[in-house]
Structure formats: C-alpha cells, structure tokens
Length: 319
Image 1 (cartoon, rainbow, N blue to C red):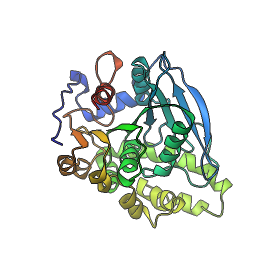
Image 2: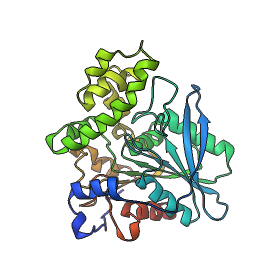
Image 3: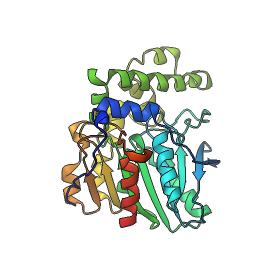
Image 4: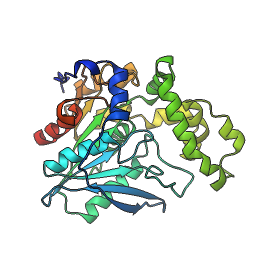
C-alpha cells in the first residue's frame, strides 16, 4: 500500500515534539464519557478490568482501546477516542492491562508490549458475550505494538475484526528503548521508570521468591527493569530477547486485516526502524501515515478531537 500523505497541521504552538507530547499527556481533559467497569477472569485466573462506554442507540459495532506504558482506560487519549466513537454510534471497550486499573493483579507477571494472549482473551470474551458484527482495535504506543502483533502473528483472526489503528507505534522495541534512554528523553525515562518501580514494589512482598530487594535496587534504567522484571516474569531470556520477540515489526508482512499506523516524524520515542515504510509498501492491508508533527500521541487538533481520533473513525468508515 502506498504511504499515505498526511493532512495533519497542528496549532502553531504545538509543532515541537515536547510541547505536543507533554500537553496531551498532562493538560488535556475529556468530558462526557460515562464508563462502566467489568472485571474479566483470564485463563490463568488473573483478571483484567474493562471500562465500557456506549453509543446512544444499541450498536453492533465496538472499538477495543489499548493504552500505552503505565497508562489506563481513563487517559484522555483513550476517553477521547471512546467519546468520538460513542457519538458516532459505536460502543467502546477500554482495556486496563493487568495491574493498571488501580488494583494490583494477582500474579507475579503483569503486562508487556507483546502480551497478545490477553488481547486475544478480551476479543474472545467480547464476541462470546455480545452480538457485535464489527470489531475494531485501536492501540496507543505499547498498545499499538500489541494490536499489530496480535493480527500479524495469528492465522485465525476472528472475521468480526474489521480494522486496526496503531498510534505512535514502537514497531522495533529495541530501537524505541534506545531512543528513550537517550539524553533528549531523560525526563520521560525517569518518569516511566518511577511509575514502573512503584508498581513493582508490592510484588517484593507478594512474591519474595521471584524478586529480591537486591534485584529491585539494581534497577537503574528502563532496560534494567526489563532485564530484572519484564523478561523474567514473562518467560524471556533477557530484555533483548523480549524486545526481539515482542516487537510487531517482524509480523507486519503477515497482516491480513485493514490496518493504519500513524507515527509522527518528530516522535522522540521512535527510532528510524519504527517507521515500517518497506513493509507498508509491500502489504496492501498496511497503511502508514507519517505526519511531520504530532510528537508521541500528541496530535492536537480543533475542538479537542485529536487528529488521530478523527483519522481512526474515518479509516473504519472506509473499510
């Protein structure tokens, strides 16, 4: 599929990556989304919390929303999409990954960029419970990688899944990690790491045989966290094995579902390898849009409807 020429033009004050990223993460507010929480038991007896919001009229369409690293279903980049889709006759199911709904999950493991088994469980649950004919998936950052990996690594995708939209996607996790560890992103990396370590602390008490205080104190960077916790808790040899196996890039050629990736060219979290130009050109199901601006999930637009949200709705209306 030819690369899509983007029409995104941000306000003059939001052209820098830092401003658009930080404003969207810390200052944006979305009102008018009424969410109802439902707890789902996973095959391994852990749980996920799903936050539902509904269209005014009964709908046979639903969008599954996947948040980013240390996010949750109340983040504006989730509720903004939920509101827009609800207003256009589509239900929204916002997923809180394990341990991200305000309550620790039950197991030592939690969530990670490639945990498509949890997304599969959500999809199966929704299709078993509801009569949805059309299912869409929209992932943000970590959730975007997960969504693309899900549809690229499987041959048995439910026919109800009609489209996937991936925003600010770290297609190459190692490349993205290298960018996050660079000096330009030091403030972001420190913030992410603190949140991750705070969430890991209770597991020191819950699972002393899995992680020691010495292990915990050795975590000084994001890659340390993935070496000490993410990899060991989820069956990988080390952080590099995790990055290699969980990255969606290798699965993009196999995608058979209409998909849209929107990665801004000034996203400081993404390496050059996170822009899958060759893969998009060689796969008619894969659409790649690379706006000049937008930072990381910072596609600020008029009326508090972000450009990526409008494009997601426009894209599903075309498939």
